[in-house]
Image (tube, rainbow, N blue to C red):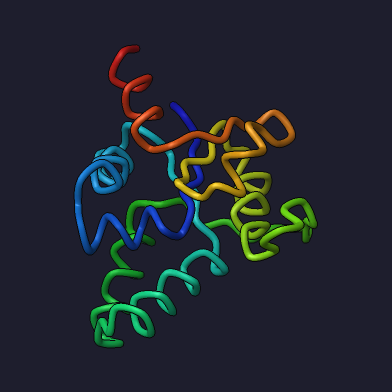
Length: 135
């Protein structure tokens, strides 16, 4: 089973827009992939939903609980300093390393520019889904 870490924006997009990010989460919900998430990622998702998109706090908490129901919760053991142009992106890599993820799924240009990190591929959700469906 593929072990995946998704960038915070994948969760936000899945909830607000559906589409390919929602397809990714549905793969995890159905047990076809193992999706890792950390408190740092969940906290960022909650902050963006509340502050930027004005989602009520109770709905944010319900979404968090739903994600925790199908994702593997990990606690990173080390802090990384990899993405110098946007240190917030390091939390995604920290989660991926802690979970032993094979792939980080993101639309973030800073992460995508890395290509891979410590043997972890970094790719867009459309690319991941195409490869997953082709297997």
